[in-house]
Image (cartoon, rainbow over all chains, first blue to last red):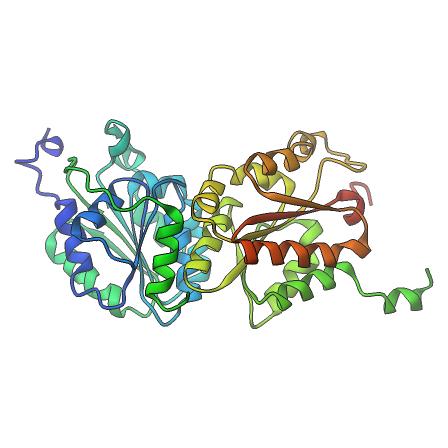
Length: 198
Length: 178
């Protein structure tokens, strides 16, 4: 199968995609979801303005919403996986009602649950996250298959005047785990300090 | 109580709203509940508050975490049945010690008509306490405001999750036949 052969699969490399999203990040605030997107962000480089979820599956998009509402002057990017997004699908409806101008939700979609043995997720069986986001009221959505689309989205994250949703097709692979700090209090406190709250 | 006397006595729901205002709550996540109807309306009408309707209660636990990361205080309003939905998400609150005040309208207890409300309603307090949430229960209107003030104080002073259970006796059992 093309999809599972890394030599033939032309979908994006997840680590390279994360690097592109965080290039010249400026004051971008990042929330990552339980599992691989947290390791991806750590692999690009740990940063006090990264809030990594090590659990609470389904929380990423809603943490991003609370943060975006609290910090209208900052840009907030959520990067999570398809499985994590599927667990909190209702969040897309909730965000679709609030539509903060400074929030972007990006899903690294490989159609699989990478942390539990690569079982197929619903997106591998035809569930379309971009269509769901659009139906929930996101006005700007991105179905990203290549580097050009990714770069276009990365630029919009810093300047769009509306809530963004992107599904980014990535290869089914498991790069070596790069683990960021996992003490929740530490992650919370350093994040708040980094943006001048505590 | 005469009508005039009634008008002079502040409603406990208004007093709870005043407590949220005094505590500088800026985001209020909620799943609609008849017991919270007036409070939700007051929050929605307040220009300083962002009232966020949720599709399910655990979204509010994550919302409050994000709010705190960004320097705002949040509170969560729900019915007792929603507590069960929050269990795993409360691991976020506990691991990171996010402050999280929750106001919970009870069902499944005093004069409940619908037995389907009873399994969760009768275990709401125990479930919260299993998750290390500090629980305060309000039976009488005159205790409501001071209890909410105390729960907000300890949540934000101690970076803790707290819940105020507004009993069904206080709220009044739902009327099924009008």
